[in-house]
Image 1: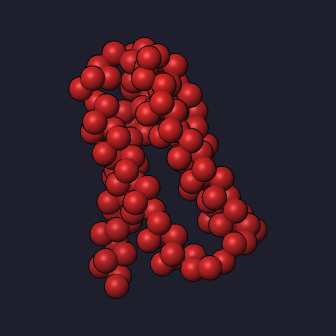
Image 2: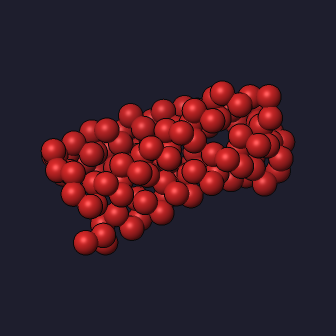
Amino acid sequence: MTIGLMLLLSLHVLSATFWAGSTFVLARTGGSGIDALRRPQFGAAGVAIVTGVPLAVLLHGGAFGRQEQVLAVAVAAAVIALVVQIVDRGAPARSQRIAGGLLIITILGMVVARYVA
């Protein structure tokens, strides 16, 4: 199970890193290059979300303490970021900036959740 958990966590972190990184780059460039990055970005977002579900089950079970509450806010921000990126295709600069802000909340939530008492 340890190897499976490491593989799952690696997929989650790598795909989330690409998703957030490409979002930040597109936000900074005003959406320039969105056509080349849209599909890989959505694919990475999907992998990050799909791998996050079993990670939550394996690492947190049915608990919903403070740590899980922080993670729930982070997950909600990630899902909203994806929805913004999907829905707001007419203004890629705006959607990437909004999604970038939400993904910052996601990243901070994932990082600090372990240290919440």
